[in-house]
Amino acid sequence: MIRTCFLLLCCTFLSYTGLQAQKVRISPANEEVLRKQQDSLQVLSDLILRGRDEAIRQNANDRFIPKLVQALKTPYSFYFRFDSLTTISIQYPADSAFRIFTWGLEQETSFYHHYGAIQMRTEGGELKLYPLFDRSDYINNQDTITNNKEWYGCMYYKVQHRRYFNKDYYTLFGWDANNIRSQKKMLDMLTFKDGEPVFGGPFFSFAEDTIPKKTRNRIILEYKKDATISLSYNPEMDMIVYDHLISETNQPSKPSTFVPDLDYEGFKWKAGKWMHIEKVFHDALPQGKVPVDQPMNQKQKRMMDPRTAEDINEGLQQPKKPKGKKQ
Image (tube, rainbow, N blue to C red; front, side, top):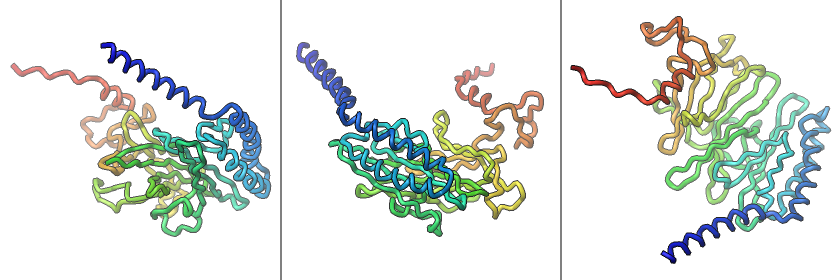
């Protein structure tokens, strides 16, 4: 009994000291240095976004990159969050194995060029950094597997971590302001091979579609500039959900005419891949009290009380009542 209590006490102490070590990994002196560097980086990052012409924005970017690298060389800089860099996207996966910095620079042509870097979490606090080189303008085949030197550039806004057969898969949700006619949202898969980052791979399957299509290495949704679409992970449904797009001018060859039609597609994680779901909501729309124009089954049509996604979700969450036996 005494031995058991002693072991529990030791475990509690080690857990506590482990948490304390996490908190003090950055020395006060280094944290102060990082705060000062962050102030300089914040000024430059604002100029990258809001500079009045491309020359000013590019100059700020050229100064920002070496200053950021210098800051990241500070021991245990991984644990400094750079919260003041509000115009720079900094995303972490659930396992905090790395973090990824991304940002865009608008050119005079109204096209965007992206920059970024992956900082790995290291036990010794030393810097392990993979710079990202945007080559999207020169990649003829968008559905190709690339690396950090041939990166399909964008600004990431979410990382979804999955693990399958002891291998980690990181789904990246990205946005590209693109040009004056259209913008893009995309799904990309990040894996590591021999410690090196790999972007893309055969992880987006359409095998269960009504008409099966070829598996894709990444998903790119290009759409009209002033349209708004959703591409996100829904934790309650445990799946990726995104807007189905159609051409508002009946020109399917022109993505700049694509807009959402209030229908939704998705991807469900199955056996190490994202499996495409052709239609997420079959008899409801997730945006409120909007009835379905043409239900699949006209007998179930409820003109005075159209169902919404909220109604369906509430129904799914309520336990089913056991059926009574027929007498």
